Length: 355
Image (cartoon, one colour):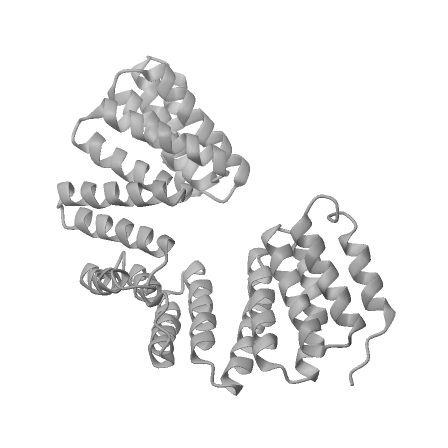
């Protein structure tokens, strides 16, 4: 029997002290961990560290999450609990990615792949490969991202587990969004067909599919069809209380409405999107939607209000220092606004900044 000394129990009690009163769910997880250690139940100990690490990850307590996960991984690998070890490595990779350490993320993802391959768990292999593909996608390496995500799709289908299969097709399709509309359409249509079947798509996946179908229709200049897809996206998002989906659908509808010169409707949609962005702390969306609101208000000949939204977006983009394209867009719209109000000095400054 693998032995666990009292230092593990002390560690858990120490890191839980800030949460016991505030979070009953977390308190229950700590109690389950202590109980499993006292009973020296190896599998349950590993699972309890896994559940704790996952829960702490959801609370954005990533260092505490890592500490729990590493304790579990050490035991799981010694006892050759491949499934649990793979799941822990996948979570550790996710934490590393969130903290910007992609090299460490790749290290843990590949360890997870190794564990799942040993037990021929193709469904879990597919999940990890999709995560690796997403990492390469965020790095701008679309060639490698496509290779991994197509392998993920192949393993998912070979696993026989069709649950949320539509997500894999939808995600692969997005990789062709800017380069090959036909391939984007092929994979998204496949995802849409699958989403009509039971358990093949979560609500979040169906929302993403509607968003893609709207985007494809826009690319093909079928604007009425695009609006219908975004409308369906909004209705589904609202029924599921999926705030991000609601915000994106409202923003997309607003763009189409502005292009159709239905400015009051466009403004109503974008202001509703901004309210959700603020509530959910979606920085990127708040910046881009603010710039779009400014553009609509300028079309409506409300330059003072337009300037307020553009300046707010510019300030936030400059503070974050990670949205240069949006910062440029804010300067462009501010140059137009100041020119309209006769503030030529400010207009010239923003025009230079834009260029």
